[in-house]
Length: 229
Image 1: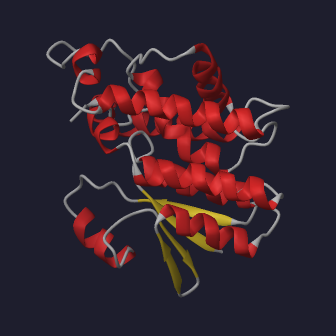
Image 2: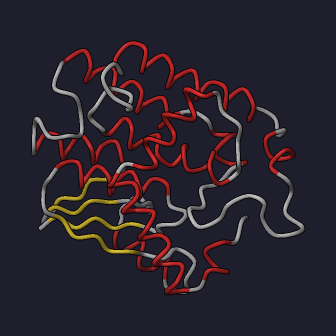
Image 3: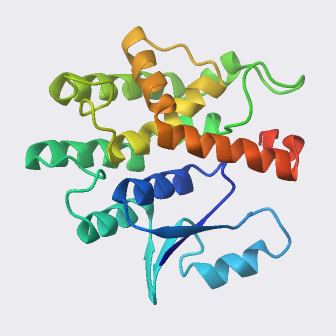
C-alpha cells in the first residue's frame, strides 16, 4: 500500500493538497504524520524525504516528492479518476489553475499562514487582519485569486459550484488552503468568490481534513495548534 508522509493537519497546506490528491485518486494509501516542531523531526524528515520536504508519497521503493508530481503520478496510476477532468482542454485548464496556485501568491501565503483551528478575531497582541492585508503585495494577490476563480468558473464551471462544475477535482484541492485562509482571517471577498470558497470548504473531503485538524488540536493541545508565527 502507498504511504503518504504529511505534516500537522491544521497548518500544512501542501500535505493537505497531497492527501486530497490521494483521496481523489481512489487508490488505497496510508498516511503518516510527521510533526515538524519536535526534537526528532529533523532526523525523521531526512529519513522520510530526500528533499527534506513533505508531503512525500512512497509507493514501495519509489518516492514521489512535490504535491503536483504526486497528483500526476496518481493520475497516471488511475486515469479517469477525480484528480483531473476527463476532457483534454478542461484537464489542461485545471492543470493551469493548479500551477498558478503552486507558483504564485508568495506574499499572501506568508502574511496569512493557514491555520484551520483559529478564527478571527484572535488573541490580543497579534496584528489585526487589516494590518496583515495591508502588507505589500497582499491585496493585489487577494484580488488575483478571486479573478482566477472567476475566470475559470466562467469558462468551465457551469452546472456546479466548483471550478469545473459539479465535479470537485485537484484544481479545487489546490485552492482549498487559500479558501481556508480567507475564512480564518475574515478576508472580505466578492459574492461569487465567497460562494466558491464556501463550496470548497464544505466539500466532504475538505471537511474531513478540517475535522482531522481539529482532532489533532484536541489531542496535542489547542494552544500549540492555534499559535500564529
